[in-house]
Amino acid sequence: MSVLTRGFETLHEQCAIAAAAQNHPMDKIAAMCRQFVDFGIKQANLYNLMFTWHVPKFHDYLGTDMELSARQELETALTVSELFINAIRACADGKKPIPDESARFLMIQTWCQAHGYIAGINNSLLNYMHENPLAIKERLIEKIVEDIQAETGNDIRSPN
Image 1 (tube, helix red, strand yellow):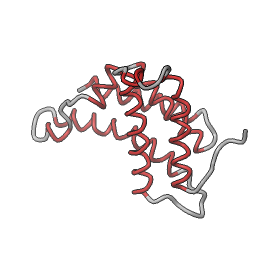
Image 2: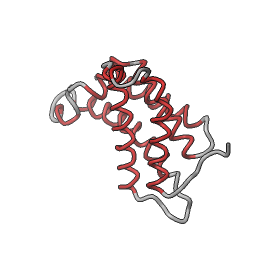
Image 3: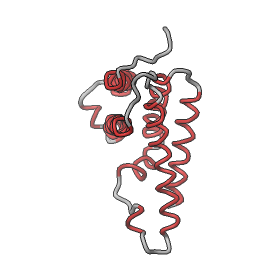
Image 4: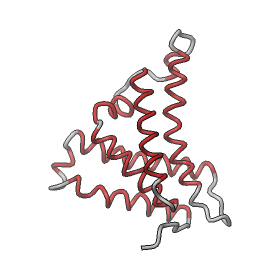
């Protein structure tokens, strides 16, 4: 369990650093997505342990000696999702706040898209669909950002 907790701490730290290097909310989201994807590809075994393979989760440890450690892992894992949710909420322009449920859904949609891409890279399936699947990473991230822009009605990006 400590391996998972450390993995989520590392992912959170890397995404937070990537976001902090940007000024505009959509740029923060793009940077975090990029970091999430890079982590999933560069740390494939750890990523699979954290997100893909069936390993016991918090509810599996309720009432056991491992419950406290399992709670710590869960809370650490949720800090990563909260980082994304907060970045999505920051896309609100002040006139039209983004409801919590919408921000949570957009985070889940973002993770599902990124996870599918990571899985396709890691299991080499995308190699059969595209001659250079790593080359489409930026296009995928731009599409994720466009979807969030369309859903929130805000285009908060740095000027080009």
